[in-house]
Length: 200
Image (cartoon, rainbow, N blue to C red; front, side, top):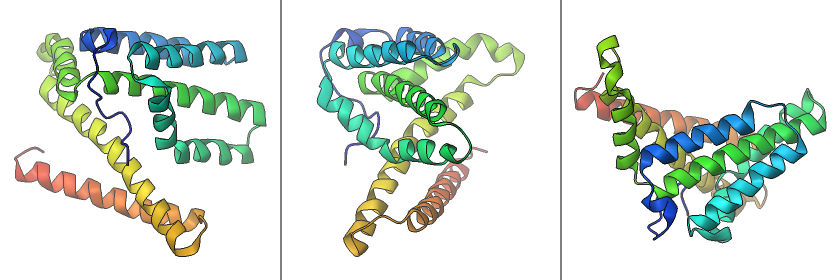
């Protein structure tokens, strides 16, 4: 199974850009997508930026589609649940913004090694050490977050395939509860591993 945002080695402009520059660019584009009131023109522009990013990064549209498939159950969740309370256009606009942000973030992780991202974050936060901020701890938290996203996506895919193999259909209840249990178990295992290394 292809993991969400896993690094892909390519020879492209995006791969050669410093991690710090990509992170700043990601924040700027995300703010431009999320902060203004949603319009279909704005969402269309965000989609164009996403497609351009995958092409410029020499990742291709096939990789873009793989990333969409990796978050398809999240897309279903953020569309189906809000429909109970909100009008359809609002739900679709919100879902589109979330997907655009996820795909933009994936471009950064697909074109940047995790160690480079962590180094860039730690360098940026180093001046804040005098105010009690621990850049190393924040870098560790970021590393765990980056690692956990594809792990949870992988668990969701395994549960879906197992459920379809048994029953031939997907039950939301039988999918969500085991996913929650396995996610909590993964969190416990991670906490135990950190505690064994003296990280509190």
